[in-house]
Image 1 (cartoon, helix red, strand yellow):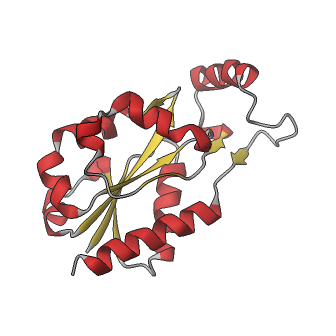
Image 2 (cartoon, one colour):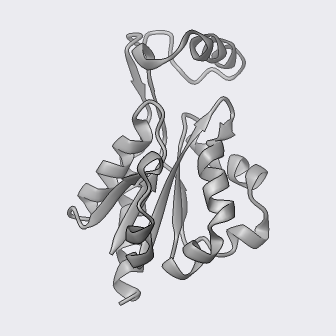
Length: 171
């Protein structure tokens, strides 16, 4: 059984979990970190972890979960997908949080793009985004101030195929 465990503040990481599951033909069990079910994780043969980038750092709760649960994750062919606007730089975020000893057991790591849902952002998040976008322009000035997405559908499909292969070889 494949379990996709994610943490999502505004919905983009959860959205990608659903897209990955659609490529897996609905065979994965989706689980939010806020409602974790350890008995389901114990039964999983493959665990996929979805982790967003907030304010230039990987999600602290998911980082903590990964660091504290290595005995659970390692035997279950675990993989990680990162959701953030700077998809091409996702490995710099990963290597800033995790050392080689931890990363050597991860089967697949992918940066799949990101999204901003402006109505869901707090005032502090909007101010932070404004400063960030001036330094590292990612969001075009012509966006409609409601949603901006730069998900890479090709990378999402490739990632899902790798997960399906992991699951098939674990049987």
